[in-house]
Image (tube, rainbow, N blue to C red; front, side, top):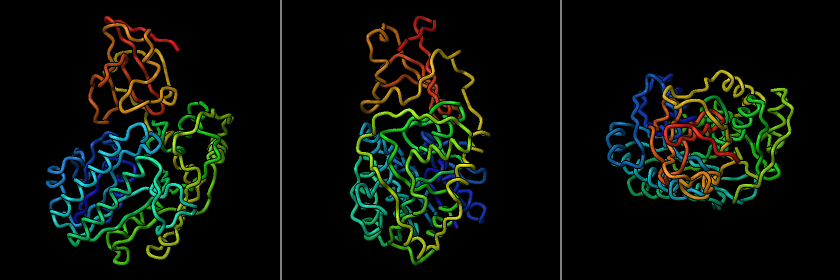
Length: 396
């Protein structure tokens, strides 16, 4: 069977591709490499570096496919109130582009990976029959994509399934972004002997899904006839813990002297969020096989072994090391507040970006002409200040 996976260079998409290839299927996938890493793409996959927003590209690469999985998303849930245009374009426009191309190519079934953010302020545990109450542009965009998928598939007689995986953890999960993937962020910081940053009071509660436990259900959605037209939560409803308790679990495994830094809570954050797994147990025989402690142990092993990259063409030694959490964005593509000070804006300053190898981002000037070179490395932002051919620091 020919299976298409968007976001194949991402955490979930790459693991799903591995599973289908191991089962003997032909896997085709795309990824813009904005959030994914080329190293994650299986060697046997047919890979295209395309953005889902470009419908003609989607039409070309989904041709002949039987099943389409849409796992690609700019998963900036906590930041989506600051970047609504980016989120809406990526999730809504990208989804509609892929869905319409797949339907035109007469695929048999589309599986859309939505988000627990769809439930918003509903009471826990979230059940699939709850009316969605998303609280931020990310959740709103996911629900909009769901509704468009349902509408298109009903009109064109295409099978669909909406999966709602939640708080998945495991190897390959990004840990260099301080606004998402809380478990991996904390592990990475503690491995660097740095205290984790916790938003609010840390009493927010979540359940965490280990990737291997979710993959069985996601694979079954391609073939199981009982799930057509269903919305299904994927993941555990056990071990419902606070973020403070999560930090303690990680610090205990690392034997780290925990003293978190608490900062202002994120806007519109849902304080209690977990999903009922009853429907997945009934339709897909879901079973939680990996405890949270075991999952965290696997993540620690992965992050310890994963190489820290910096491009060979970086300009020189860094002068400052700033966690991104200390320079929050105020709106789409805005300059971090640190660099809006008059002292930091002499004539001739530029902002250029270097990403890690295979990130798909070339050296470029930032859209609002700010004042630094920025290198993204796991868990850090490294900044080079450049003026008239020499380095210069800007203190704060």
